[in-house]
Amino acid sequence: MPAHIANTDRVVVVTGVSSGIGHGITKFLINQGCHVFGSVRRDEDAKRLQAECGECFTVLKFDVTDEAAVQKAAAKVASYMDGHCLLGLVNNAGIHVGLDALADQPIEKLRKQLEVNLVAQLIVTKAFLPQLGLDLTLKGKPGRILNMSSIYGSYTLPFSSAYSASKAGLNALSEGMRRELKPFGIGVVVIAPGPIRTEIWDDLIRNAEPTADSGSLFAKHVQAAHALSVTETSKRSWFWEPEVVGKQVWKVLKRRFPPTHVVVTPNFWLNWFGPTFFPGRIVDIEISRRFKLCRRHKRGVAPSPGKA
Image (cartoon, rainbow, N blue to C red):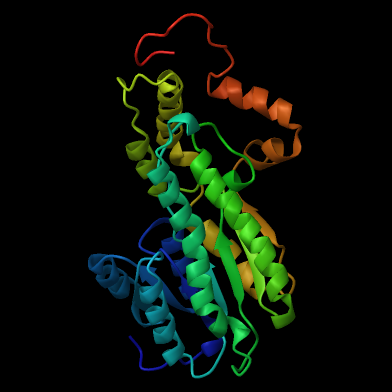
């Protein structure tokens, strides 16, 4: 860890850098000459990343839901900045708690989803806002906040409503934040990735394993959604690499007038344009076909346990 940072004009804080998109962003920014402060939760990840990234990387060890730990990390970053503003904060850390029908959704899982993907993003942002320019005594241009949302923050797939709700909430939070911080010159941009080759897809499969004997009316449908997820995950050859997101992050940090919402997805027309621009009824029909939700249940007949 350096005693000081030579180029304080290119310092970025990125959360959740141990793997996936956060790791890809970190590597890309370092290759552009940035110094990255990256957050991890585990000691082994901290050691591995410090060895991998070298002097252009400084580890911050905290859980994004731990306010005290986040504040401590923000103070650590400030001590290296010599009174200068950060170039940016990338709120990347997030989770997917798995597939559930909302009627069966355990409330604790919903709370966890929102706590990490929504509430924690504000915890981190508030801690670093002074260094992004809310402290008017700092030197240099105010920085930018990049909130890592998802294409699924703009439309929702069946049985993934908790995840989409957290990302839609982050979109709304970002919109309000962007307008509130405008007088201070602090920009706020939403980055919305689609299918990117990361471990979150494997986590989704593990967390989504349905319970065959649950007796839920939705069991058959969730099982079908799980099977579809397995199929899509096995075809990850068409997924984009995390560094593609890193490239877009760098563009947003350097552009004078960046867009407010950046979509980064393969199959743009299928994954973004169609679901967000076609009428909702048409999108409903297409998604229902894909997830085998077109047939209506017979009424007046009690289904067998675990079947629908």
